[in-house]
Structures are given as C-alpha cells and as structure tokens.
Image 1: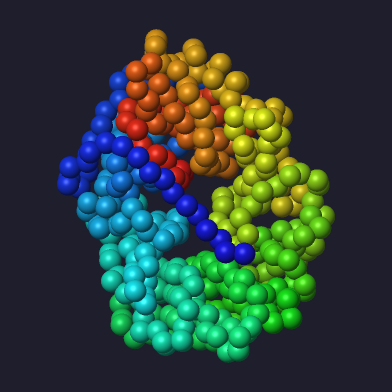
Image 2: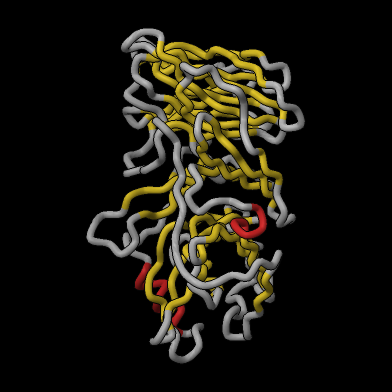
Amino acid sequence: MKSHLSLFSHFIFLPLAVLLFFSCNNDDLNDSPDSRVSPELTLIGYLQGSVVQADLTENGNPFTLTDHSAINGVPASFLRYDLYAERISFYSRIPENFRSWDIFYDAPEGTYYESFCSFNPEDILLYPLSSAEKLIAVTGTPITENLREIAVYLRDKQESECVRLTVGNTAFFEYSAITEGENLYIGYLDETGNTVITKIDLTTLEGVWNINLGVQESFKATLDQDRIYFFLSGNELEVRSTQSGELISRKSLNSVNLDMPQGFFRTAIYNDQILLRSVNPQPNRFPYSPVILDINTLEMNYPSENDLSNRISNDLKGMLPAGKMLVELSLPYTVDLSNDLVIYSCTFSNGSENSSGVVISDLQGTVFDYFDLGLSMTIGEILVR
C-alpha cells in the first residue's frame, strides 16, 4: 500500500552555476497545427548523477536548467519526493532520522532541513512527507510480536519541537499517507484487516475523523480539496467528503484495465475529470495509456489505438529537421486537462547521438508540438505549470 514514486539516472557534466541557459533553434519548436499554446513545463530528472530541473517556457526558447545536487545538495540516492503545486520536496534517510529539501519551482535555492525529530528508540521510521508548514514522519512501534502502533511525528518547519500523535494499531504493516493543504490523510490496515482512513488537522494537531472502508486487500485513492476518490476492489469508485469523511457516492466503473499506485497517489484533477492510466496489451512499445475519467458520468476517454508510437512517429516526420528521428516514447507522461494535451517524454536521435525531450499531442496521438532538449537527461517527472 505504500505510495512510492521513483526517478531517473544518466550523463553530461554540469558546472556549479545556479542556472544554465540553452536556446533552441527554429527547428526545435515548431508552429502549432491549431490555436492551442504549448504549456509551460517543468521536467525533473537526472543528468550525470545530478538531480536537475528543466523549465520550458511557452515558446521553448530559452529553457533553464537547474542542478539541485550542486546548488541544494540533494543526493542522487534520495529516498522519495513529493510534488506540489508550487514546490517539490525531496527526502533522504540518515541514521535514525530523515532529512528533506523544499525547492520552489521558480526559486533555484531551496530550504534544507537536516533532521526531522528526536524519535523514540523503539520507533521504526517508515515514511517522510510534509505540508507547506509541517515536516511529518510516519512511524511504526512494536507492541507485540505481530502488532505495531502507527504514529506520526509533526514538526513546524520554523520550530524544532515535535509532537507525536498515535494513529492506530496494525498487524499487517500496510500504510499510506498524503497531505492536502494543512491536512494529513493516513490509510492503514488495522489489526482485524479493515482499511481505516484517518484525517489529521495539521494546524490544530487533532484528529478530524476516522472511516472504516471494511475489509480490503488494498485501496487506491487520490483527492482534491473537497473530495477523496477511492478505487476499491470490485471496480468500485467511492467518493467521500474530505471535510467529514461521509460517503457522497459509490458507483461501479466500466471494465478498463486501470493501473494506479497502491494507497494514496497524486494526479491531475480538473473540472470533474481525473487523470488515470491503463495497461496496454502486449506487445506494445508503450506500456501505458492515459485515461481521463469523468467523475459525474463515469465515462472514460482514452486513445482508440493500443500503440500510439507509430502515429506519433509519422506525425513527427514532417516536423523534425532532416536527419533527426524519434527513437521512443517513454514514461513518464502527463496530461494538461485544461487544454486536452498529452505530454510524453521521449528520446530523439540524429544518427550519432541521442537527446531527450517531450512530444505534445492530443489524446488520440495527433502531434501538436515537440521540444528537443539537445542533451541526454533522464526525465522522471513532467509538470504542467
């Protein structure tokens, strides 16, 4: 049930400069086939073992490259990260503690927290996360041989003192946690095997509500400010209020081979649409396809073709400069729901060397734009700004 995102690895030397500016020529960003404007994008990834950020403007020229390993000391071996609207937070494990970095997308120099809290010796450190105001650590403390107490340590980022709150007991050691604003949501299997969800107000440091979803092997859930969307076994979608935890609706989804992370996960939600993904039948050069779920009608919109690689490659042939070709589409991708655009990470080649970039298309694979970085960066995340 752990919700985990992973990143990258690769190639090219970066000097210890705050920003590196690159310009693309007219071949790199092409005229749009319709009136839509390419979104501003932020790419997070690896470049020769450094954690880097590339920011692409609407016109793609120039783009900026920031080395967070050189500037902020983020190690390539970090434990996990969280993406928020205005920042990315990296977390790393150190002996008997966690440390983290808050980096705002528009400010290259971040804030470093060298440790979280003074934990009890018997605590098992499970999961670090944060909100805008708080550092948070989920822990498990053995009670008996088969029973553990789930707790959270909360620390104001401007203070050094921590508060420990007990959440519940588990015999299964399955858990997931996520923040939304200054609220923390924790899901875990209690000692009887029931899935329990707890909401904690990070301002008052008090529990707001507990709900029991019943016996579930696992749950998958995402949320916005008002609602939590639970994707339960049996192809059921259960929608609950974030304010009260009360059930709003429970409906059966159409049979689509959806593939989401276990536990809580973050995804795009816009105008009652949720971005999900499905597994493509194999063999297929691209393992996943985006799925856009209408929360009200439960209609799912997804590519009509199982493999969009050929269609996108053919579209790009008329847009790429002579001698350059698309080698492959790859994970990750994201969807700009406000403009109905899919942004895929990809690899280009000029015959002698490869470079990284993105391709922008509609859901059915008609290419709208592309951007070639001109360097070999392993892309781990794509954010629409």
